[in-house]
Length: 313
Image (cartoon, helix red, strand yellow):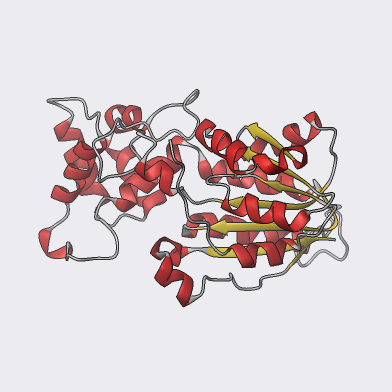
């Protein structure tokens, strides 16, 4: 299988990671390995890249893409929340840069066969790691109407969440919803026609599919845990760089960086710090960095990207 993905903001990622020869970096979300290939190019000679992805297809693809530098990389099929465990296996305690791209790859949309795309007739799976967890089919068919509505509204910011949830419950009374195309059809039929203007920037089912993917893969809770662990794995001066594509993801990244920058969590009226919190990060991006208009024209999927970076103190 050809793994196809256009990496976003590669130059900006390399700059904010401050990639230098002889240093150690971690790409926590290999995807199509576009960012990983750029990192490897800049860390030579003498540097080392640890690559992580929970998708076995991404690991297999990375092994091919980075084969010319096999002695300078180590690849692991793991969720990025287990970054500490991965590094301990290699005997590495601290690194000089950690990168994560929170977006879904074009390959997963177009070729995975796991129901990420509403434009295909595929099983409703949506697991990044096919070996564990519940599937999107499980949630769509087993969650009650209120749970579905809450998922679509909270994680997808879907305006018509209640109507969509109601119609899903009605549809599954006669048949189990098993295919991505079936779910997409229900979503489209749930939205009043006057609010579906074609052509439009996004398909009407986009938010529902995104919400299900986030819940299936526990993306937000794992992101919070990852942020907390990653900070303590950086050398002084080491960089953390995150690409997010969703407002909820960006909010977590922003708030965690702020918290580590502040350190102390004591109320403002306390005469002295008693919590023992220490400042661990210095933000490098007071506002998120966005892709250039030129990049957006070449790769429209990059338009929602936000880059945030920080340096370990």
